[in-house]
Length: 149
Image 1: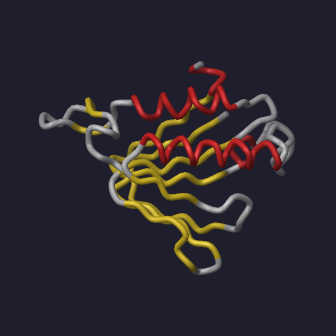
Image 2 (image 1 turned 90 degrees about the horizontal axis):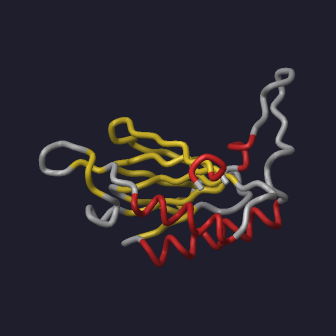
């Protein structure tokens, strides 16, 4: 599983011109699923996200978690995180999880985020989404389950 985590001041996702998810200060999380991923991996990844200390404290040091700043979360599925660009000029997506598994794990992640964070908003799986954000920092982290679990 791959997550791209962006610390944001605000973010929103639109589908067909309508806002389907919108947050203030918090995390925009893009979720990529592979066929090797499981509920256990998803849970561990979201737990890691909840414990990361990348918000500034009163001294300007990145020392606070999202819970400590009462941050919000916007979760967006993004199979292109598994793009393989090693050969040719057209990315291959064969490493991305099959759509049924990816949607199942995406729904599970949305549920877990809803349990852990102050506010959780989401994109729509498989939809053509327009995502806009104000990255705070900028601060962007790639979490890969093969590297952190």
